Image: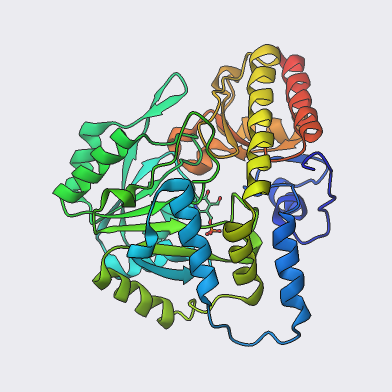
Amino acid sequence: MFDTIIPRKNSGCFKHDGLSMTYGRDDIIPLWVADMDFAVAPEIIKALECRLKHPIFGYNLIKDDFYQAAIKWQIEKHDFDIAKGNIIAVPSLMTALAITVLTQTEVDDHILIQTPVYPPFFTSVTGHKRKLLTNELINNDGYYEIDWADFEEKAKQAKMFILCNPHNPVGRVFTIDELSRMNEICAKYDVIIFSDEIHADLVYEPHEHFPIGKLGYEQVITGISPAKSFNLAGMATGIMHTLNDDIAKELNTMNRGLHTFMGNSFGLAAFTAAFGESEEWHAALMDYLKANCDFLVYYIQREIPQIKVRACEGTYLAWLNCSELGMEDDKMSKFFVDKARVALNPGTNFGKEGSGFMRLNFATQRTVLEEGLERIKNSIREII
Ligand SMILES: Cc1ncc(COP(=O)(O)O)c(C=O)c1O
């Protein structure tokens, strides 16, 4: 089912229709924006069709089945009992993050992130006039680890820490030990943790996602969403969770103040069907993505040895170390667009530590991925 190519051009999707705007041409294979070229689960389509049968789309009341679907998924997949906390519906995890920044920190407060990282993390801090602290992840031959001394030093100065787990773009799924240590340091210095777990259900065995909120620290706010794992980014739906009633009150008040609390009719239906009914589809997706990841790593190791890559522990994003090509970042970005004719994300978008890297989204049909890799291989062979 995931092998079927579904043309997306002119569907108003950023990944395909935004190529010209971003790369200056559209005859390139889009392996960039983090969504998938796959149809969603049949259960989601059915739920949307059912919602469409009722022809009125007025203000929504978020029904209990929405919350129950999220609670069930979290307990069954991650042994995380969010029923015991407060659940707040939001249009996106970046909205959840902005609400957290606005309510839990003040102008000029310091907020810690682990770089390289998803670009909107930077702007969610600076855009609200807060100050950035960066804990650079250490690249050990493609395996990224935490610089603990630096983390603790920065945590001392920080009001809040934004955790990305699983991590975009480096593909790490942090271990219980790592999470316990981050949790302990944040608790010691009274640092609020916003844990972005949007990639939580894109984890490959033997790795397992462990929600940091399970450790019971009351100042954790967890962002949970079906956007990545069920391909629903355009449905604008997600939740945030916290154990702390006072924090929940503040988050809720801001969510109402911004008028982002109501959900949209289709997003609510899709969210409920995703977490509530689409487990089988999701299991098949994971098999396909794992095979794509294995294919990509094997292909690159065998055919494009100038690029270094490691199988990611989670996400469908491969972090390609292209530094051996010896190009300046701008030149390298142009090379991938104009010579290889593939659209990847330049590593520097994720912070200065991304210099020499490109990010490749492999959540596409195997044939498309293969063609993209072949183009990269051929273009590199021309220059060596
Ligand atoms: C780590 C991370 N957080 C959040 C998002 C975006 O989530 P949303 O669309 O719910 O704001 C992405 C999208 O790629 C992501 O990778």
